[in-house]
Image (cartoon, rainbow over all chains, first blue to last red; front, side, top):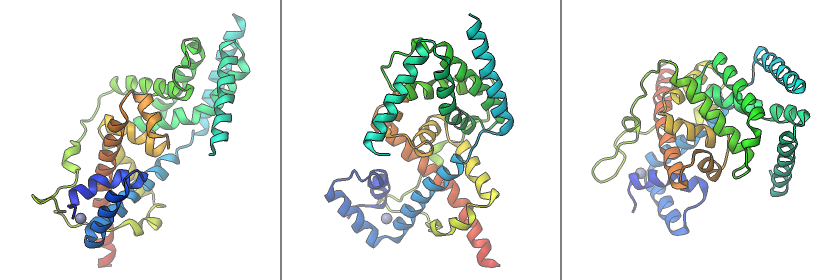
Length: 82
Length: 209
Ligand SMILES: [Zn+2]
């Protein structure tokens, strides 16, 4: 059986679906015998989604948007003069 | 997105870039419109400061405008934009006093001599739904990401937050694909550990109540 360290090292490729079938099988066998690694796997996946959802919420604030708009307008005006 | 859609988008973008190189200002508007959220979001996540992110976004938009003729199309246009954004953000960060990052190794999982889990691992993954809406949780997540060392942070932001492919990230950062994967894995392990501390404490508090 593979150990927990090997199991953790394989999680990245496991999520990507890029492990060969033999390695996938030994990983899944490890999960069956090792609840801590299942917990580890679940929380590893959750970490990714939680961080993604939280950091993706960032929108350009209105005042910044306005500043950018006038900045672009100004740039274009200068360009047209040339 | 399907393969054909991706291909179409790329073609539209290539046409816009050509137009801009030819001096068409309408193309500039379209490019600025489609990229400014990405530029702002990435620089904000790197610097966590609205004024700085605004400065960087302006600077990048200006660079796109002025330096468009130096873009040779060797890599994707978007990779070029991301690279300019990263450079501008790093310049800004360097000009400020920086707090030292924690060592990532301290927060990687630990195993005993036989390679088995040494610490007690709680599965908090099912509790996160209700927690995600709390501002406290969001702050904890942002602080954890802020603590990531620069090398791991940028890979994490591009791949897991922006959702770019591993190949694309390796193109932007000029890293090998295995290097991208290993940095990303380390970043996730680091963040998992940080979030575990928070969620486990939350869970035990709830248990007491
Ligand atoms: Zn295990």
